[in-house]
Amino acid sequence: MAVDWLGFAYAVAIALGGFMGYKRKGSVMSLIAGLFFGSVYAYGAFKISIDPHDYWTSLIASGVLAVVMGMRFRKSGKLMPAGIMTGLSLLMVLRLLIF
Image 1: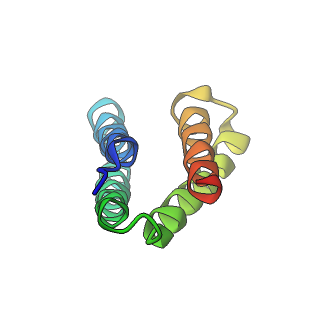
Image 2 (image 1 turned 180 degrees about the vertical axis):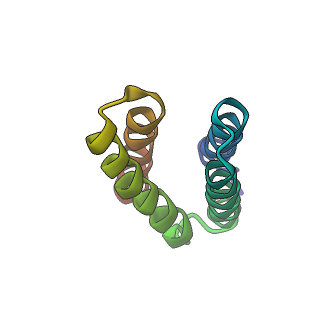
Image 3 (image 1 turned 45 degrees about the horizontal axis):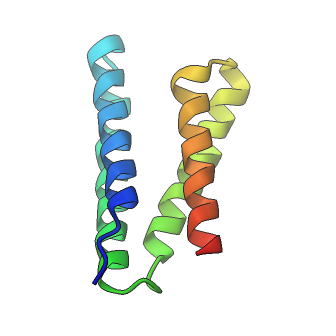
């Protein structure tokens, strides 16, 4: 059984991003979304660790984040945090689809 360390690291990055949005801007919605998507992706990484072919939870979570953060990046044009999270989410989607 191989642990999906990359998936768990991505989940932590999502949760920390939500926390930083709350800490810097006072955005409760950012905190809620970060903790929710971080938890969902951690669960998906856990499922991948048990069965490498059970990647749908992670794929859906990273796909939704790629779309949502991509729309925010397009609207704001700011690289941090929307552009970075869009790029990371797209990389995770590609990782899950290719491997």
